[in-house]
Image (cartoon, rainbow, N blue to C red; front, side, top):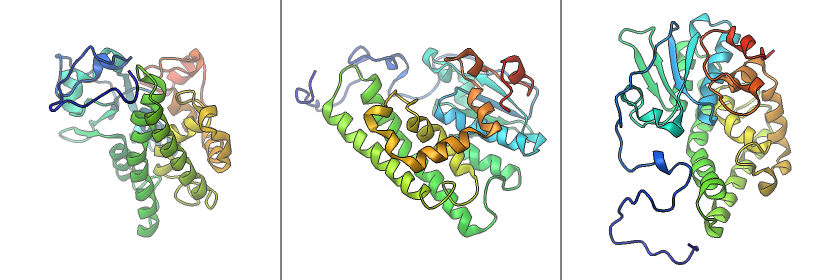
Length: 288
């Protein structure tokens, strides 16, 4: 199929076998569970059900940063959710996240337990839970962090579901779609590069939840690790994004957070489930 030989029908109908790609078996136009499956529960206050995609890494980095900062109440169990096998459509997962997307988080220190879905909401919840951690006290400075956090949540779908889909996963290459989303992703990188030219971190001089939200997406992109598109997008041009990316990558909590719920790549970088800090040692890497 080319860019020009498709005419939309009067009424769209879901055809499961049309234009198949690696995610076709989990994409559907309806919500709700497909099967009964309760979620496991560990011993810690927080129960995270996730995968080490950029959205999952945001939350594991935040939890590890909280622990690094001495917040013992942030201890957590991280359970692997294999989205390619449809684990996100189990009844237990859907009860925590009705949107059936990873990550999903339960705070079992409250009565009744509190569910949190959407990774940005998790960062805000965890910050509030632990006294405004990684968030400025001043309202004006806090507004800057909120703005960049919302920027990430609004921008990343163009990077992932837009550029990433058409560049890496679509069953055929669409010049129009790839060009359209490549232009937008490069514009986003320029937005970040201009901001980081005037401040050490995304929202100012301090490391905040805005950095934790943006880094897993755009840091991976800047290093050519996302969709293997670094050369195509000339990511080396964004020198301030690259400086910031390298700076954050050296944080011990970030090194650990990247490993959690990771089940691919170098075995030393994987920790499919995390139930105790000692699990990092068992994985052959401490993150320090």
